[in-house]
Every structure is written in structure tokens, then in C-alpha cells.
Image (cartoon, rainbow, N blue to C red):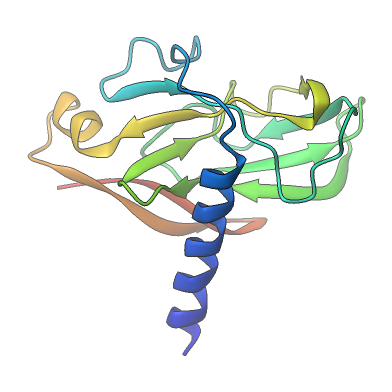
Length: 151
């Protein structure tokens, strides 16, 4: 039963990411631009979006498709404020990978982030593996996240 609950949670987060995407993909972020499988960024508003606010965040893993990450909300000084969201697999199989660098304090104007998307198969093959896919995983303190699993 717990696995079904986790799968449903990942599905809901994925759907929120799809609904949160308000523009076509832009170029990959500076951290992702030279990585295999990088498809570009898109605008994302978290489910507790704060219209008109500049919000502050730290990413647990930086741009690392091979590790599940957690985007942690903070105040302007970097102290956690209880907001967070994990990375996710989109329905078409792309990984939503938050950025910029690991634990780098950064702002989101209008509480809107610009995560990267990755084709996990391309990322894994480009890193010397046979194939890859997007898989759900925890990334404490986020209960749900995702990463590119390579074979």
C-alpha cells in the first residue's frame, strides 16, 4: 500500500510540474548546457505559488541527473522556511532537474523557477551506459524526487 501511495504522490507532483509549465522550453541552464540529454528549461510555479513575491531557494544536489534532489525554500539569508519540492519524472519520461549549483542560494522572481529537463536515456548513454530511464526516489527532506537510473 505504501508503494502505491508513493507512486500516486510522484504522479501528482509530475502533473503539478506539467500544469506549472507555462512556456515552451528555453535553452538549458549554464550548469546543464554541456551535458548529454539536456533539453532546456521551463517556467515552474510550485503548488503553493506566491504571486508577485521573490522567494529564495537552495538546491540539494545542483545539476546532477544521476542523483535525486530537493529544492529547499529559504529566507534571503539562507535559513530554511519549510517550503520544498523534489525533482520529478514527466509523463513523457523526461527528468525535471532543479538548478543551479548545489546549496547555492538563489532567488525566484514571482516565485517561479526554471528547472532543466533531461532525456535520461540520452544522459545515461552519453555517460557510457547502455540505457537509462527516469525513476522516482526520495531526496530528504523531500519525500518524493527522481533521478536518471542508468544500466
